[in-house]
Every structure is written in C-alpha cells, then in structure tokens.
Image (tube, rainbow, N blue to C red; front, side, top):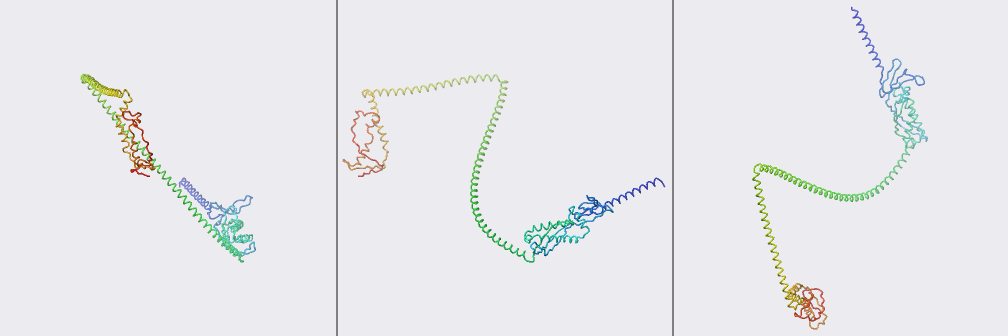
Length: 478
C-alpha cells in the first residue's frame, strides 16, 4: 500500500472522530440547559454558591428564563404556581364579647414569586404534594383567624367587613410568607352565632332600615311634590321666556332678512348700473374705435386720391378750385345784399310804426288841448269830462260786481217804530240805494262832481239794519 494513502485515511478518521466528539458534547450541554415555564418556579439545589456571610446556599430559585444545570453537582425541581383554594369552616370561635360565632370562609393562596419568599418555599415546600401544602396553609389560617376574631366585637366583624378582611389578610399573609406562600383572596361567606345575637342585630337593623326607608319615601314624596310644583313653575316661566326670546329672535331675523334683501337689491342695482355703464362705455369705445378706423381709412383714401389727383390732374384741380372760390365770393356778396335789404325793410317798418304812434299821441294831445280850452282852460275839468265820458262803463262794472250776489237769508228786526210803512220795505229800498251813486263814484276817484252834471243833496239817514244770515226769503219779525 501507498504510505501516503494510509496517512490521508488516518487524518480523515481523526476528523470524523473529532466531529462526533464535539457533537456529543454539544448535545450533552444543550440537554443540561433547562427552561423554566411561567407557571412554575425552578429550584436548583446542590452546589449553587455561597451566601454573603460565607455559608453555602441551600438552593437557587428561577422564575422564567433558562438555567444551565451542572452535571453531577447540581439538580433541579419545579414548584407549581397554581393557586390553591382552601375552604376554612371555622366554628365556635370566641369573640371579644365571649360570644361564640361561626365564620365560614374561603382562602385562595399560592407560592410567592418574590425573591426572599421563593427561597422560603424552596426550603419548606419543595417535594411536597399539593394537598400537603393545602393542609399546611389551612392550619396556619385557622390559627390566625381565631386570633383575629378574639380581638374584635361581633358588630365590627358583621358590619365593618373591610376592617375584618384587612386584619385577616395582614395576619394570615404574614404567617404564610414564612413558608413561601402568599394570600391571593379572602371571601367570608357568612357569620352566625348560637345565641341569636347577630340575628337580633339584623332584625334591629332591618326595622331601622324600614323606618328610615318609610321616612325617606315620605320625604321624597314631599320633595317630589314640591319639585313638581317648582318644575311646573319653572316650565311656565321658561316657556314664556323662550316664546318671548323666539318672537324677539324672529323679529330680529325678519329685520335682518329685510336689511339683507335691501342690501342685496342695492348691490344688484349698483351691479346693474355698473354693467350698463360698462356696456355703454364699451359701446361708445367701440363706436369711437370704429369712427377712428373710418377716419383713418378716409384719411388714407383721401391721401391716396390726393396723390392720384396731384399726379394726374393737378392743373385741372387748381382751375376748379379757383372757380369755386369765385363762386363762393359771388354767393357771399349776394347773401350780404339780401341781408342788407331785409334789415332796411325792418328798419322802415319800425320807423313807420313809430311815426304812427307819434301821430296818434300828437292827435290825442291836440284833442285834449281842445278839451281843456272847451272846459275853460281848466285841466281838472277836462279830466272830469273824460271820466264822465267813461261813467257808463264804470257803473256797468259796479253793477256787474253785485248783480250775481245771492242772499240766502235776510232777517230784519223791527221794533215797531216805523212811521211810513213796513220796516222790511224800507230795508229793501235802502238796500237798493246802497249801490254807489255817481257823486260817490267821483269821490272814489278823488274828484268832485261837476256842477253841470248835478249837485249833491243831503242824504237821508238810513235805518239800522242788522244782518244775521242771508236767506232766499225776506222775513219780517215784530
């Protein structure tokens, strides 16, 4: 055989053996790592270290996680954390009043997870069955419960349950911690006594409660009636106030709506005015632009035509221009002559009218001069003659002034002293005489009646007439 081949085979075998050894060691190590479930406590005992004072530790407790257990020098066990329910049927427990009572109750305990208490559980409960742990805890609870009842009155135990349960929890848990347990819950079902003391207390409390309830019902009924009346009163007040507020709000809302509508209409009118103004401005602007465009076009066309005319028939245009100038001058001369003729005619007409007016006034002046000479060279007498000539027209005007005057009623008071007839007839006669005579007309004009027209005679006194009211019929009263 080849020596090299033998050497290579030995080396492969060595590697395989090494791998097998390493794998075996790894499996052994992994098998020595133990995990602790959450509902258990893993107690590692054996050589687990020393305490702070140099003494050897009895065990190491692990709750959760994993721990490597050294082979040959360490071992482990689990403590179950499942809660333990213990029924404690305590009877004939002596209270502080020397009255024996029965206190049936139920306690729930479990192994504690606190570091120091776990150590107590590892030292005192490791290896015990669940019923053994239950009996151990039951003995501790019985003793502590009797001790607590002996220090309390029945009234405190029966009425102040919180105080009783607090005392039980404090004392019992203190003793349970010594063996690694903790108190989870305490439930006292009932408390009885042989003498009937608790029952009597119950009846007293029941009677008091009934009386208090009746009193409370009566008070509540009274309060209910008062409250109902107050509620009705408040309801009526609040309803009236709400109605008033609602009406006020409606009126204010209507006012605001009216103001809003007026503002809206103002805004719409202003917008319409602006729109119409803008439309008119735009139309005017468009027309202006159109006119400017037409003007520009006309100017361009005129310039084009002017250029054409200047280029083609400039001589003919100059001749026609001179002809139009001459024709315009001739027309202007004709208009001037016509205007001068019209002005001369108006002047002649006004001059003729002035001469006619002057002639009339001259004739009137000459006639008045002759009238003055006929009146004895007295201008006053001549004027009176002119007025006398117009007396007929003046009298007619006065008569017309009172002709249509109507009297609804005339009352004449007659005292019976009339000598020459009825007072009514005299009144009517005097009424007709109230028309101003010719002499009075002259006096109204500030003149005296000429002697050749008559002389003024003394007027007779007029009887007193009292006019009460005008009537259609003249009545005589005596």
